[in-house]
Amino acid sequence: MHRLQDRPHKNAHTKLAYLLPLGRFLFASSLWLSKNHLKKRYDFVHVHNVPDFLVFSAWLPKLTGAKVILDIHDILPEFYASKFHSGRGSFGVKLLRRTERASAQFADHVILGNHLWLHTYVERSAPSKKCSVFINNVDARIFSPRARAPRNGKMTVLFPGGLQWHQGLDIAIRAFAKVSAHLPQAEFHIYGDGNMKPELLVLTRDLGLGEKVRFFDPVPVREIAAVMAAADLGVVPKRADSFGNEAYSTKIMEFMSLGVPVVVSNTKIDRFYFDDSVVKFFESGNETALADAVLMMLKDQPARSRMVSKGFDYVTRNSWETRKRDYLKLVDDLCAASES
Image 1 (tube, rainbow, N blue to C red):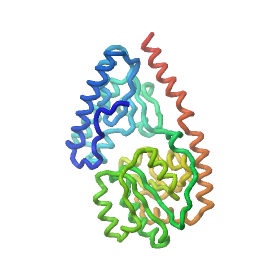
Image 2 (cartoon, rainbow, N blue to C red):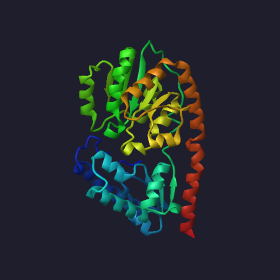
Image 3 (tube, rainbow, N blue to C red):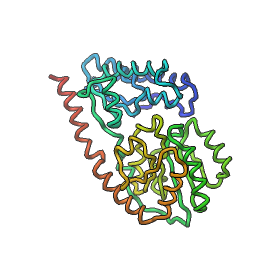
């Protein structure tokens, strides 16, 4: 692994502050990739977005016969519109759709992060035969069941991830005010950073939850796995009327893999992949429904145990081991086509 540049800060409030580091990374990665390709030619290059246009950093390997995969983790026009509250007809969104099409044309194959995005992408940017779906799978070497420490009467609800508007943390904090009134031994721990954090801190203070809702800085993935494993309940409160409605949340599978039950908003994407046996759904945006779901799960140990068991079954059926062969075959087929 070679670190070329730090990631753009999640607290970036302006479009320029967010996009400039991406432009710098395109230049740096293009230079690094071209230099190393001249030393020893690559057969294929796998490029992860954001942004889509990072795929053009592989221009020299592509020019000399290498195959290029573009891996769409976040579908960019919708992500941009949600992050900066831009309309679908705004200049920025239109420009990103054109960039999306150009990036798809440049790539030899496009991987989408879920089936809903595949449908959208095929409609506007690439033929279906050029696309496939690989959800963001969990690393079983890190996210696996482990022994739990004694609870000492405390109950912990956990959210790990970005603190953006579409994640719905303000809804979760308001819901926790209701949870705390019924279960004073419960705490809500939030690990992460993002442009909503200042507002969330103010909301927590205004609701008098300073002792019950605790914020922590992001930690490395191995550390967050240990933190998640120690929780009694995970929560994924995404909004269903924004980018979050179709954005697959890997943290759901991470909680399942660790043996932690999870409460999830009934977004379109999560209803597509999960059912009521493996997660506890609540009406997205409804703080009372979220509070009721959290209280029900915290008070019902047998329900939590059943959900954990079903979750393990789901993880086994949908693990990376079941898809790894498909990915390796895709790479082999692309490289074989290049040789022929």
